[in-house]
Length: 159
Image (cartoon, rainbow, N blue to C red):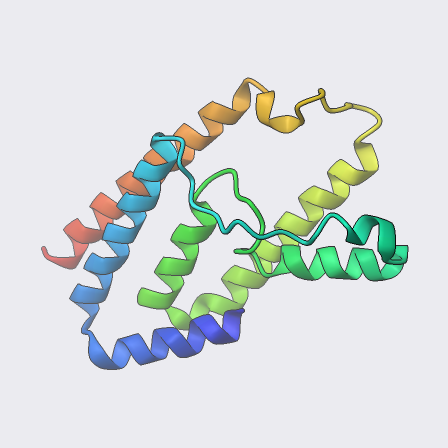
């Protein structure tokens, strides 16, 4: 994924100067932030098929789900921070994509691993983690941060 972001970002850098790329990135951050504030975090309606749980051996199932999680953009997101980082990496600093995306993938996989190991200590409600009272606040905070970063980015691009 980071290689694709790097190549795309280098291509964009050839056709647009820095101020325009920063402005487009700022616009993307504001749009993603507003989506979070409106409780409409974008995501792709595609997941590893549930039938794999019954048909794949455990090792292959874990590898398949791990690969899907590692792609970052294929799993449902709770905030738009991942999308904001992808936009910023493509438009502003494609050379940082390996560090950013690998770091995000490792953090995501670590969170899933911790939750998988500790699930019996704090069981999910019948509706899962989404009914937790902190969930809407987390999304709103992420949205506000993205909007503020977008405004700051466009301000620094044109001053």
